[in-house]
Length: 338
Image (cartoon, rainbow, N blue to C red; front, side, top):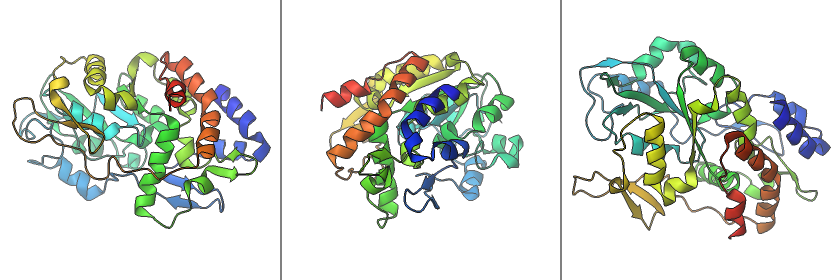
């Protein structure tokens, strides 16, 4: 991870804190405030309890079923062959719900957080959380905090080195604001985005230790994964295209998983009120099923100067991420169009 760290340290070295936060693992959902340095818990949107996981893995539960049918009482529970590992506020829930419409996919609806919070419970606990599958079906789960968890790549590799990994990425500036918006909805008393984003607003020093900012340094986290997995086992899904062209992105996902392209444009209906696609069953006349009210929240208005400084901060890391993945997500182009 020395290349990305070197770039980051050159950007924030004037603050004298680069080495400290680079050495400190980011706990799932952790926020480091710019003022006090104190750790404040910001649970994942769909933070999962043991009770929920127990229900998900119990016989007859629908928690692990694909959206097209109930969980079968036959088959067997298997460790997942594919994981949606991130990123938070990138579109992972939308992707999970869409892929669950495929008859050859079974995915647990809750986030197991096995490779970050529950690893000490062992693989049998993890297996028991999974839904039952038949031969030829794929078992999946999604936990967005895996992507930024230092130990996750090694742990997943030790489970199965051929595990397929899916990462949903989104313009890191938009992602950071969405992350903040989620926290604000639960804790209205927190400081403004502008206050949290800077160590020194006058000097324009970005606080890269704040998780909302740090998660979006995708190149930094990806280097950790590439120590254990080849790029051929990682699929990068565009959170933006998941909204504008969900069928196109889902075609890539199904190809990556070795599945027949069954989830197509017939499965999506664009909801103008929410501003993103909703899922429907092509053969069903019922109303499309949209993500809950926690998705598509209105973002607070952010000072344009702050947006500009964040874009400048992220640009070298975005370019590095494009080079590492061989994909241009055109976030700079997207911003110049605004």
